Amino acid sequence: MDGIGYKLKKIRKTLELSQENMAKALGTTGRTLRDYEKENFGVSYDFINKLVETYKVNPNWLFRNEFPIFLDEESEGLIKNVSPEEKSNLVYIPKYNPRAAAGSGTEVSSEYVEYFIAVDQDWIRSIIGFLPKHLNALEVEGDSMIPLINNGDLIIFDLNKNQPNDGIYVLCIDDCVLVKRIQCQPNYKLKIISENKVYEPYEVDLKTDNVRVIGKVVWQGREIG
Image 1 (cartoon, rainbow, N blue to C red):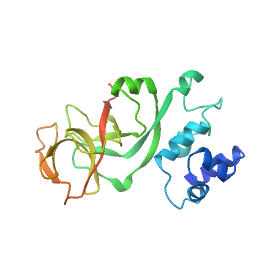
Image 2 (image 1 turned 90 degrees about the vertical axis):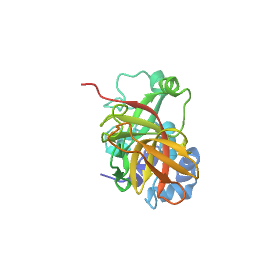
Image 3 (image 1 turned 30 degrees about the horizontal axis):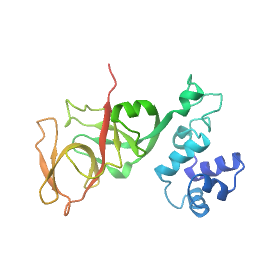
């Protein structure tokens, strides 16, 4: 599969844009775009989101090589049987691998975008009251959050809500991604709690342990059947 740099260049050439013009439209610099095209460093989520919104690029083509390149093409589009008005109201949430591990944890080193989930902006607002710009999705693996969150459930979390507070969060502890309930304790400590009572709560120290709060879980769903 061709890399993201090749695909950025293909989009730009197809639209007959210079690097400077495309970079300006996407809120970055020509130098940064050149580095993206050469794959000198990873492309940010904000850049991808802006690319999709500005040029109607199919995010599944970017990350899974599924055609067409652009969402408004007639044949085999990412979103079928959706009116232009409905399509303009969609936002695209990246679904990452690894799965958030509701148990022993999954190593962060396997992380990449698998695909994007198209959701209606009004639906997101009805669920959490506003439209965050930094939503991500993960599939949960493990049984430690049963019965609240089951193995295989999809969760959506807000990267902007990365200051620890009481609630359910996606965490990175010792290079593993976890979804857990947390409670703030004195002296910069967090109590890590599983819904499944088989798993004992434990404490981590934000000052001395290798802990990072990635984002707060704002929605969770599952497949029925």
